[in-house]
Length: 542
Image 1 (cartoon, rainbow, N blue to C red):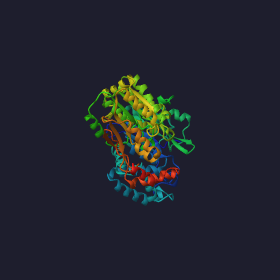
Image 2 (cartoon, helix red, strand yellow; image 1 turned 30 degrees about the vertical axis):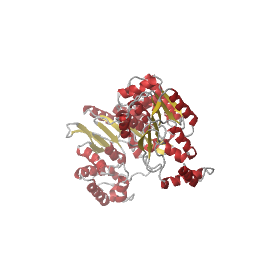
Image 3 (cartoon, helix red, strand yellow; image 1 turned 90 degrees about the vertical axis):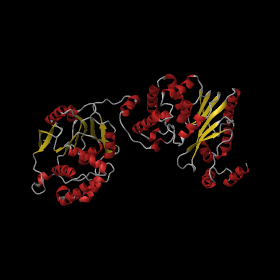
Image 4 (cartoon, rainbow, N blue to C red; image 1 turned 45 degrees about the horizontal axis):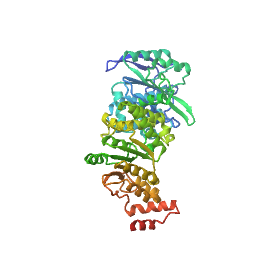
């Protein structure tokens, strides 16, 4: 199609020159144009690709300084202005009715600081000129509800509306009928951007005329290495919007993919990562634990025995031990401990180890994340960023300071940390061997950390609950500190850490009213077990 506009330069209030899209078609109202030049009635598409997913993908990339946007879809255009900082935006359309509405929005967004006031005026305008704007497709109220209801909509809340209003108020939005198939238009756009020190941040071809391979090659004159291209693509789920950086080569390995994704920002659900490996503990009360341990006398010959991941290393970094046993029942956790040992021994620098560790968890995610198929690489990048921010900033973290890292590293270098595949409730023989080994060396268990394992055994493996208690008891002396965690109710809320000194174990039970149903449920799952009533009678007799 031939462009219906000419490009002319004007100077704006920022002292930049820009191209304005001067339309040659007469479209000012429904009364002074013929039916041939009115264009199609406006209607938001019902079979559109997932705009929220496309907006999330775009916004995951760092924003360009002095960025320019070019787009052709009404809904996509205004929503992008609400989610990405831009200096200039070309909002393009070949539909005269849509361009009239763009101009009305430009005027009234600036007139109405209040989103509510703008929506009232918008509803009134669409109702008054419904025949022109909407034809018989929908009512004004239906149109505005469909436009403003999505959470990502620029009309959904005051903050998003204000971002769009800000771009309009600064004179950064230009409306018109523009074709990217014309070389002169492309050259003018590229020249103007260079002159003003601007770059094309996002070019969206969604809603534009069809572009062939030659057209796509021609628009490369607008690209920088950071330019994002959005274009429709067919998939098994229908039409989707692909977001890419055309001048950036696709990654050829998972390590390259990691570095490509690490410059971007992604959201994720914590529930997707609630499981192995337990990289970040969900227990509360750790500061009080470290305060208590700091007051505990340091006696020579102390041994550490613990489960779970990060808290083990935090304790090892804050206290001297002759030896440490780090245990878990899951192969993925043992694999993780093995890599940590290898990485720590090979890496003197704490910062270098953090980088290697970060890369390892992403590159070999199937090794450490048994549920890796339940989340995307993008979600994993978002999660790992939070994990390593926590490791680098948490006051008690072994990876926050060089001295803490060095203390753990020296334990590994001296082969004083042993990793064990161990079930606290079922591996009594191995635990007895470890206890005897410690005693023969005239050492003692200084710290025993069991997180909330007792809760799980009590309700998920009750037949071995007493064995677990016996196993734990075999590790205790009057110099031992047990650190565990317990919730107020089984499996409800967060577990709170506790410190217990000496030869008595903490109370792992809960009030009967909280335990009864769970233990009955266990009995139904395992019909050969003793009745619940008998369980409580035997416990009371003990």
